[in-house]
Amino acid sequence: MQLKTILNQCHKFKSFVYDQVRLVNLNGKKHIEVDVLPRRNGKAICSGCERPARLYDRLNKRRFEFIPLWGYRVFLVYLMRRVDCANCGVKVEQVPWARGKRELTDTYQQFLAHWAKKLSWKEVAISFQTSWEKVFHAVEYVVHWGLEHRELSGITAIGVDEIAWRKGHHYLTMVYQIDAGNTRLLWVGKDRTVKTFLRFFRFFGKERSQALKYICSDMWKPYIKVIEKKAGQAIHILDRFHIVAKLNKAIDKVRAGEHRQMQKDGYEPLLKNSRWCLLKRWENLTEKQEAKLNDLLKYNLTSVRAYLLKEDFSGFWEYVSPAWAEKFLDRWCTRVMRSKIDPMKKVAKSLRAHKPLIIVDPIVKTVIGSK
Ligand SMILES: [Zn+2]
Image 1: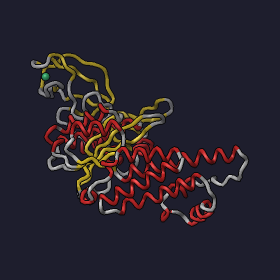
Image 2 (image 1 turned 135 degrees about the horizontal axis):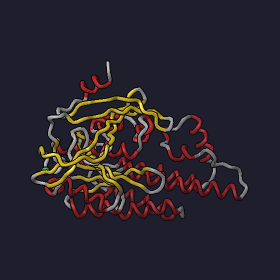
Image 3 (image 1 turned 90 degrees about the horizontal axis):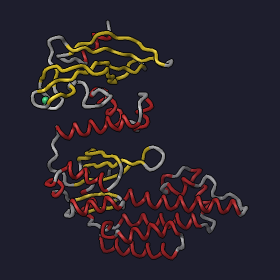
Image 4 (image 1 turned 180 degrees about the vertical axis):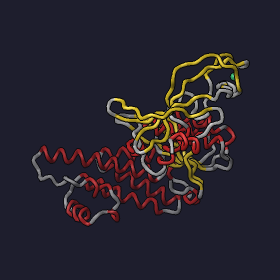
């Protein structure tokens, strides 16, 4: 059987045919190329209005990446044409296997996005010899395609989150639907600025934005600002995950600083290998880590005091009554402010400043499932 035959089974287009298939050796790396030709009687489609149009001229050959086969990358090679459209003028034709200027076929994007649900995007990129950015575009494409073809009504709760990628400060903003029993990724955008998040609301639409009841996010200012502007009616909640992450970051900072200082002063390296026993929840520690923690607790270290403050804070989540939760938070913040541990004080200040967003009715807590 030929590769052409298989392609005609799984990836067939009415107005195009597969021609030659070859294994190409490029700088010692082999890949498969498949020529695609327009059918002689097939009409070219205008990319402006998506209607058939008269042929104008031919451009350059373009390569579109397809699903890899036996470890070889696969490319469809096609000589793009331009059309002279009665409505739009001279335009590049639209091909049915890829959108716009994309280098990846729709099929390959769906393939990558499928794996991106199971593996980290970086792992997907490595596994299929592609870049992180292409995996990102694939997910974005599939999410947007899904939205165009999917019901968006009845969304009452969303969560916004960011992920960092690459070294340095590159972020993506991800928006999820987090209604009880219905959690899904709704939108992905580059960066985590006011503009990024505004783009989400533009896409989501005014009517749907104003029907939102709950929005969950971290304390990132641009998000808070946009939420106030675009969905002021919704209850904005700072979620537990983000608060715990902030506490852990503070402890990490305290620990690293203290460890460095102790080394400098020539003390026993007590804090060596202590990172995870201070960051993990107590019940998740391994036996070895637990022993290490018990050992550390004997010393009056700043790291230990910071750790104990964090552990105390977990009591906050047990409160059912908002009034008692508030009292607890106030007391905790006062203690931290007196602790003289700067990174922890920073967290306490931030929690105080956002108190109304943290103290929410317990009913809300049950509506919002965990992400
Ligand atoms: Zn047109």
